[in-house]
Image (tube, rainbow, N blue to C red; front, side):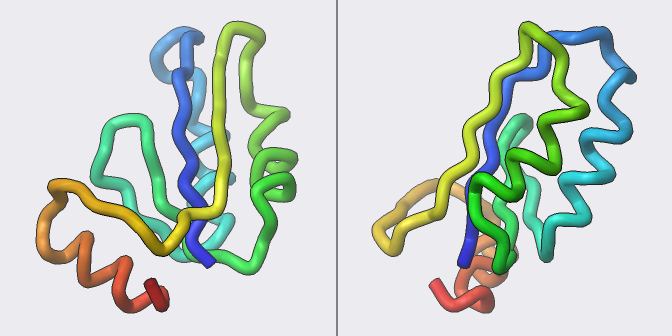
Length: 88
């Protein structure tokens, strides 16, 4: 399944290195939008959130959801290829 992870990180710049490293460890990923990642994983949205939560600061916001099969957008070809390879 593909999860979409989107966030607003409001802490000081440079204070999220560990957050990004843990995010990358959740599965195969694609990152073409500033605050949005697509993660191909067998983990649930809750499991991914729980992995990332310790690295969030009080004013941060995060949303993790399973991507459905009806989607559309403007992304580079290699992004669409990645999505297709994940079974969507």
